[in-house]
Image 1 (cartoon, rainbow, N blue to C red):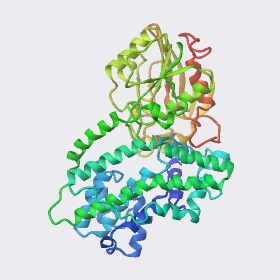
Image 2: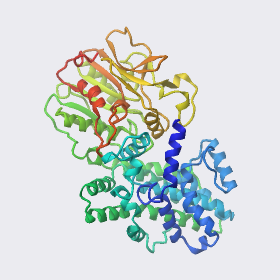
Image 3: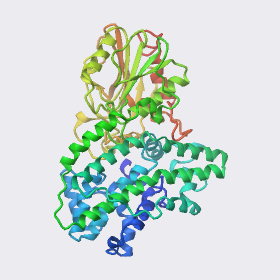
Length: 571
């Protein structure tokens, strides 16, 4: 069963040697090094058993805090956390929530509680330096790996980290531990600020922007590319570069963990009362974040688009609309959803490999669409997390009415575009009641079951339970697509794709002629590599491309010569 399988996978990672789980330094290693840098005045309150709890137990509690997971040994903290979770106002991944609890526990001399909150801080901030957390890497390691898709060389993804490969060798080799230890040698932390609001602002801004950087930092991907190089050349020089690059990448996160805990200790030692106002700090932090994002990198600078970004193209090129707003792992961030950028890069790779002329169009900088320049325009929108500009929506409608073809890979469909489609709704996709994860949902309007995907040409593909729901887990329980209630017999509309069970067949993809142009809606998961295909081995953990199913479904509609009727046999 899915839940059991997912927790088995996560459990195996937790009990594996400490350098596996974060796939960088590992939460245990990070927390152990943080412990060594903490002031003696703090460490003196704890026994060796408690130190081991801090390193091996509390540093993982952030991922396992719900009632179905192991409770911490400190019941007051467990009760506090459970009550906070019940109110839906708390998540131990949010350092700015945990920090005041850490300070309060220290001031009240509840040292075991303080140690647990310190472990949560270590985990959450440590995630910023974990090599498996950027979107593409999380997808390849957890979503695909947990469902049995093999890594390079035909090895299972967890086994890819075995000691005889570069993925594992640089984590397990004891000779390289001094390289990692050197990253923190002698560092004892710096107090961020002695002003409560400034500290919370700093934490909010730091953690938010670090998540953005995680998906942009070329250093992350270069480490994995070095690993793939080592697996080919077995060069000691390449191996050493891997370890040094990992140490450099994780050093910043490790120091930020220590800075946060040391600052909390400083607040606990103050004689005056200290009040933390998260809501007020969030207002000021929001302004800093918006400014940073406005001045941040554009899409063409992001590592996902290296080698495929193309702004200039001759007339007749496919236009691919891409947002400049960085995507955040596990959350919205981008107007078109957290998976928008890396899925867009996969589409670009497919177009480039097939020799289809294309042009990247920035959502933020786009004023109008030219049918002659781009007779076909597409975008990937797993989940529209922010209101799209009215002028942008109007330009899309005008584009279609002028004879253009819009391919919308959703997810969500904003109002102006939805009005051009047959009536429908937006449920989560499920493989049945027993596979709803992480929380059961009984409302039938929110879920549609799926065992097979069928296409108009008669081909059928099984929907893999674990892979689909791993996707859902990675997007906060939502793997959504539009479910059309009234398509069959609708004038100008042709069903393209259905989700099927023995009891039902639901249309989730359609081609709609409207005005002089047409609109093609396809579920976004159909372009996810290895989601529906029977290909079982990834050529690369970072260089994901369209598989044969994605190519067969999407690329014929990108033809600028097929006309409004769609590709041959596309109906």
